[in-house]
Structures are given as structure tokens and as C-alpha cells.
Image (cartoon, rainbow, N blue to C red; front, side, top):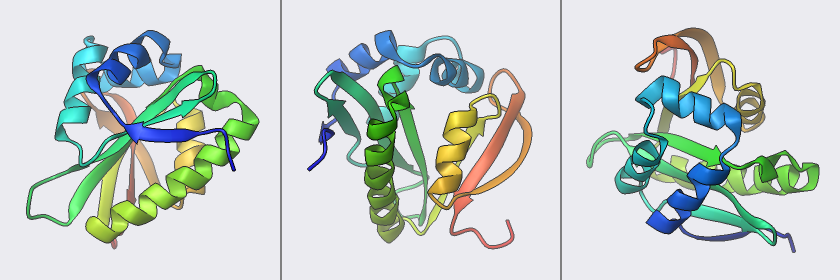
Length: 158
């Protein structure tokens, strides 16, 4: 049995996360949505289907979820914002298994998964590739118009 536990993500988790969020995730949120990282994180919780908080014995690991494009659609955006605890190799390996299960669960509900990742966020890009996502070439995205990679699963020739 692993060290990571899961619970329903709450506003309190989001408040803790923004004080402990890894620098690359903070940069990504600001580049995509603007400078209010807490507001963006809370919006992610509100629009997501059953958002999750992952914890280690040392504290909050990350928040993650899946935001549907529409109520009746088959497309959603997976997301994850983490703390520096995600860089621990044992934790990262355990979380990769959790994430793979999460993506399988999400694909049962939403066969098409699509979102964007900041091109500077190399650890997240590697993680997404290991999960089986297709990573497109970077293009301007978000409020800052910085290079982001679109990543996806279940899209054919799109």
C-alpha cells in the first residue's frame, strides 16, 4: 500500500495549494489564466467533475480533476496542479499509477481528453507523455500568449 491518500478536493485544499504550489505550475496558471492563481484554482474545482486532493504523510501533494466541455459532450480537460512533493521519486512513481487510473476513469466518461501545458513545464510534459497523451508542437496560448503544448487522448487526426 502506498503513501498517497485521496479525498474530495475543497476550497481549503485550494488555499493550501496556492501557498505550496511548485513554481512551474504557478507560472503555467499565470500564463494561461492571469495573475490570480487562487481564483483560477477555485474555478478549476467548480467546473470539474469530482475534483480530487492527493495527500502524502507530509502534506498536500496536488489537486487534479476533469472539466467537461459541456454537460452532454464527450470531451473534457484533465488538469493537475502540484506541490514540490511531486518531485520525490517514490511519490512520483506512485502518483503516476493513480494518474493512469484517473485517466482510464475519465476516458470512460469523456472519450476525448484535451488541454494545454506550458512549454516551460518539462516535468508535466514528460508525465503526460508517460500517461499516453499525444503532445502537439507548442503554439501561443492563454492570456500571455506564451508557447503551450496541446495534449490529448482520443482525438483522431485533430
